[in-house]
Image (tube, rainbow, N blue to C red; front, side, top):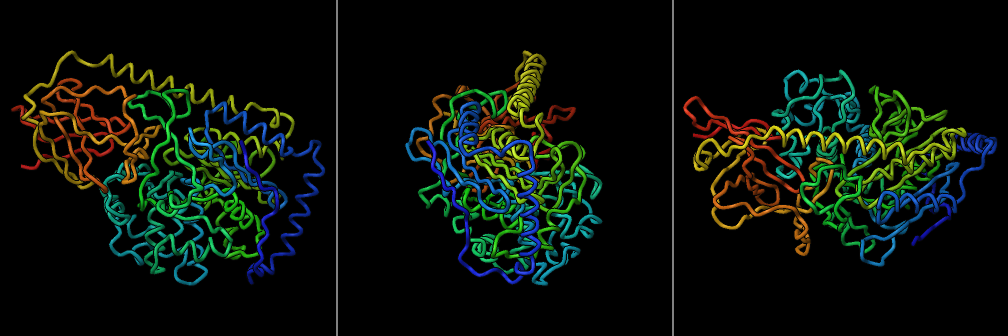
Length: 565
């Protein structure tokens, strides 16, 4: 089932003054793009061909619903919805259905900074600490040297501390824990994908502008562009009846990729009424709105909120990417720009990104020199949006080999290889397990432990029924499985493979953002225990002194904790 809108999106408002001088250049670019398409030996795909490919792809990857927008020669070719907003319900996806766009939000973060730069409120070369004096990183020199342009170009080295997401009370609390994290590379030494610095973007914009990031983006970007459904507030998105539900595996302990056939998909709750990761993620939008966003970045929107010089700067390579990820629509080395990744795909230059959130995957790719753009979003985690984007660019601009290439097969083989590695690693872990229980009585592990990164960890003995928090679950060893206050009471855990632990047993508890995180500890062997938070396994390894006294504990994701006397 699908709904479509094939008319160009034309705004009734007058051209933005900054856009007037660009019209002639844009018309020349569009004319050249049209001539280029006309000169190709093959015809661009028809709407019917696109429909057939998408519907077959959704069945192949088991995707309930999908939104698609395509811009050709600077004008909207189609905005379209396929499938259903929620499994088991008849409501169809259309071009106005809201989806979480995950890290496609990063381009909006860069654009809000560009707006403040054009306002004269900051410069790209400003030091972060000049605007946020409290901000600290892992070493004093990096703290003092990090500039505005660094935080949107993936070269700071902080990595992505997603495991802080369920703990941090707010964005500043999240950022205040970064000095305790271990950098993944030296500052400005190489490309290193980071959500943390785009989270910092939100804090910087709010401090300089004096308003929330969502309100600033709405006033300065979304409203001028006519993106009237776009928001960074989950509660706002959920209040709109036309929103897609995310889908995921409820099954815990499933070894393998979220892309593959496994336990049955079920609708799960949207997460976080206010997301501390905005604008690294957290933006919610529609195919129709994202078509307007693409027109702006292609220079054909008549109400551009930023100068073309700022748009070009955001598309300009800054940090070399030697080995592109599967979501990047280019071959071989490329680069990260500002909120966008860029490189060559066949003979054309692309500018794009992708996004993941629990139960959502999206992809966007622009071919600026040809006035082309494609955006797609599905309401389950799968590779389909990335495959669809590559197929679409190849179908419009590729040679015969690219047009006939098996893009599905590429990703399926990669996913199968990843699954095999995961299964092999799990088997090796099982084979190394010793047939021994805990080395000391359980009450010897009881106590309070602390570190600067995660805060306080409390371990106690429970002798009644298990009381773990059972969140709706995602896939892929990410922390998007975090529960929110909107977790559905009816979300069944009956199909889980988890047996209730035998009493007495240990419970570990961390201070969560929305409620305490309680983790029943299951003995593995000796002083090692397993805990499961959603589909995330957290290994606990207690440290013992020569006198068999527990001195600390080390956790996956959270590091070493010292025992509090």
